[in-house]
Length: 248
Image (cartoon, rainbow, N blue to C red; front, side, top):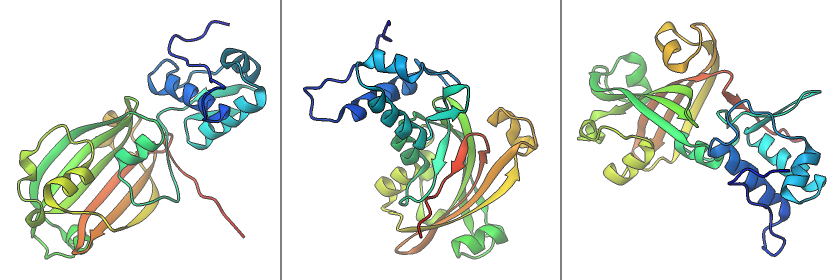
């Protein structure tokens, strides 16, 4: 069977387990677009032949990629690429950029709005500041492998991030900017997830119909000096999942 040009067969002389090498080979084909979103993978027997490993090894690699949110298995149909899905679950305090990188997805970000404004009641309560105190609003379209995933709007106390409006694009990781430019390092965050719908304003950007299912996420992040970020996110319901592992 012909191999994709950039597929690397597992090498038994390398120290990494064969299942890990097989997983990385498949992950590369998804990340670089050789197998775009929606592609049906060859069956286990063909993948075993392509990579020169056992079907048990292939099964292990596919299971890991499915748990990472890169693949979906449909009973009776096969396995398909779902490369633009972000899986949220029990995790450390990470940014969207870090979450994407951990899942082998290429992060994309476009600033839609960046301005200073007075804090309303909701924002001032979240950031523990006075109402009408100036805050910086940063509204961004977030993407994974060139597929829109969500829209995030962050509010920051203006006094703590003087000069941030001069940064402009690109702005992939807000946390990296806060850490490197302003010495703000997140220590704890509180998130609330609610099921909602995509607004008419956001529908075109997210490439869905207005009213489509979405997760509405509110996040307050603090450092040693208190809250420094209040973010409201609208995440596409078909490209953002929450998974948890339960124990007795």
